[in-house]
Image (cartoon, rainbow, N blue to C red):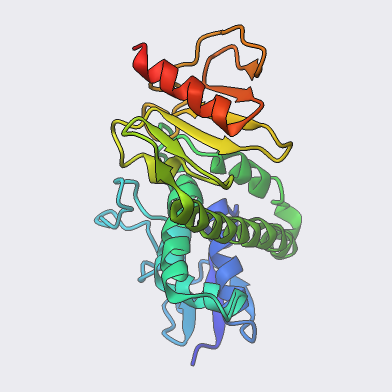
Length: 274
């Protein structure tokens, strides 16, 4: 059994802080030590990460471990790859196995890769994790390294756990959307319930519009993006003057009408008039 958690001292970054979130939750009985002392980092009785050249250190010149998009793994990605399923089960003991795997992959793609990219100097990889890394870095206090590191861990735990909870909620809602989805035609998808749909629709090249209810009782017609994450849609809605049209966004990516029937009428007319 390990005697202590060990990571490097000095300036800390988002990857070792988030890795510490997972490890301090899974191994809460172990003290956390920050050092570069090789006698400690080479001790097999210690769980060492982001330093020491072992399994969970990514700084080796020959280290080729990557995420599926080619971004090199940092400490967070390496720890997540190994321990995420255990961490998720501890957070939510009743979570279904298939949801664990989907959450693991989704959180990696939407969150962890961005942090690993920044730590490895892959500046061209755009991710909201950049601002989170800045927030982590701001905790660093040279005169109180360990205390500031622990404060950063507390902050990072809230961020990571919230990302996981939000991801699971999205996956559950997405499943409900898929189960109730109906294709009116190859170009039009009708959703009788509102929820996340973009990841599902990406697999249908011909689909151009999604029709769904809004919480205010109106109905929305939304254009399908040309690619994942894009704000550009395959067929923008034109500005039309109809008494039942409540609003059409100036970019044409979506419109709001009063009823489902009018939403479908609008979608069909746009498809027919291309």
